[in-house]
Image (cartoon, rainbow, N blue to C red; front, side, top):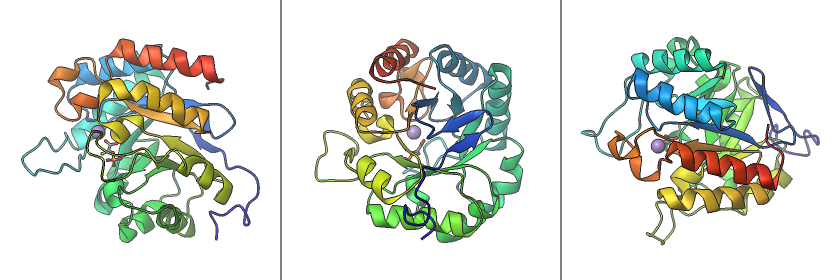
Length: 264
Ligand code: PEP
Ligand code: MN
């Protein structure tokens, strides 16, 4: 298989603009769950950049459980995200939920994200693979590692080798946290595959004050980076406020990670 270590023994380094993920340092990606406004995105982006993030995140098409919940700003959100990235000199990533958005989105993002809910949307995987651009592939909430790697195989088989795997917690019997971070997936995937692995401690826990300890654990276990939700004013967030870090909490996270290992 294309994703396997047997096929390619050396680690893959994924380049997103000037950022190299999987080159031996820890890359921090941060931003709001959803782009809500120019002001919110700029303030989150500045907090991310000031604390050493190398890429900005921001959702424009949100896969919400409820159809009545905020669905994202769509193309307008991508415009805002791109503008923030350009003004801060950072590449940007946003989730793609439908193949019909791909050509439009290519004009705004440096990296696509495939969310947990779409990890096995095989037609979407084929279309995104065909773009030949970097992709963050989240693990499905109920996906086995083998299934996650096969989803990456779809992307590779269809034209991109620029894949960053993202562990974001799986659904277990435990309800205290939103998901359960499968920390062992990091060394397992590193052994099976040459692709870089990052961790999303925000969706893994769903609880702001659990993000830092889980992030530290992920990096200690060998993660190549972290993707973290931050918000200038989490109480007012239109999605995932409870897990979004205040800017000063992200600064603390970044400092603690740097004490553990070199960051990008
Ligand atoms: C997100 O990153 O905003 C998101 C929806 O994550 P996941 O697909 O991991 O739930
Ligand atoms: Mn979110």
